[in-house]
Length: 252
Image (tube, rainbow, N blue to C red):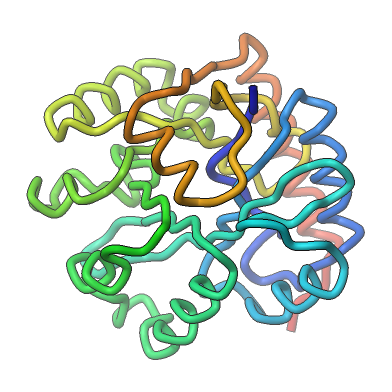
């Protein structure tokens, strides 16, 4: 069995530098909340994205498509903004993630994000898991994109932040959209702060070593999602602490 969170971040915010100590505190909290693995889907236009990956490469063994972080499997990934609004999670081998990030160098600004179809075309055929992040979130919905494009994804994200801010009915909204598209629904905490881990998770029947194995398990629906009864406490506590920590950090 493998409990995995498929939408996480390793930094407090886009504007902060990557801190290995902070990242290790995230990993410890993830394990303490019963997780065996997480997908590190940091924002593609975060401050010094490649520096973060360089530090991970220098600090941890990489097996299959994941970093071995004190017993936690950390799959490499990225969260990407697309043109006309929406976020897409790509979980893949670190070489694919680096290649994709380099290809997006001219698409990092809000008025120049990559078209959704172009991103799908670029990653088509990859041994990767492609997830539509928080598809019904009011600020960054995916619902206005063509169903033919959305159905090329592997799953839709049931997001802990949305469950907290908009209510548990968000889960039903995402499931209804996914059913129309004939896609499964996966869970992601969207955590930038350790306390948010465990708010939601996915229970896989077997351990996965690669993104392709993750994708296969998701596509064949060999997993279950779980929403913690403590979700509201976890997310609220994480958001409050995140704001306090951001006030103490100096950013250029």
